[in-house]
Length: 180
View (tube, rainbow, N blue to C red):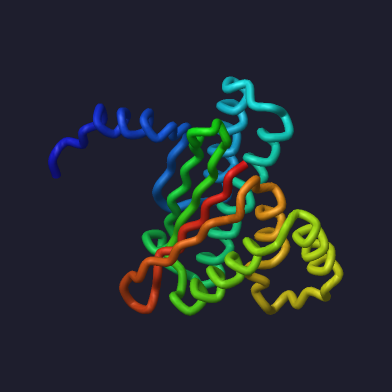
């Protein structure tokens, strides 16, 4: 393997205003450690307290969803890896993005759910959140695209964006982007 051009990577990260980037297997302790680093970075960046809390909450929700999904399927460490990026956009908003392998059929359902959430305004998202809270929960069934996803949509200043790219063995790479 040739040497990684860290300078070029640094320049790319700076140009795209990437504050935090992780790629690899994700455990509960790693989610916590990266979360602590994110909190410290947001404090050093003088983020407004409510924005910092929302960025942190969205990061936690996204990473825990990935961990739970892959753990429930008993996937290998390689298949259970995640890519997580926290950056700023040109308007100074925080952007939390995550991606992971997912069963292609699950991904299609998830993308459709996210697109449907994108059609809702803040009041409709609040109502959907309350409705989801009242629904009985079946412990045996994965809720996917439920309360946590609605909460991410509520915290976002723009509609969520999702993408699905085909991968091997009936899987796809699912990406989610939230702007805070």
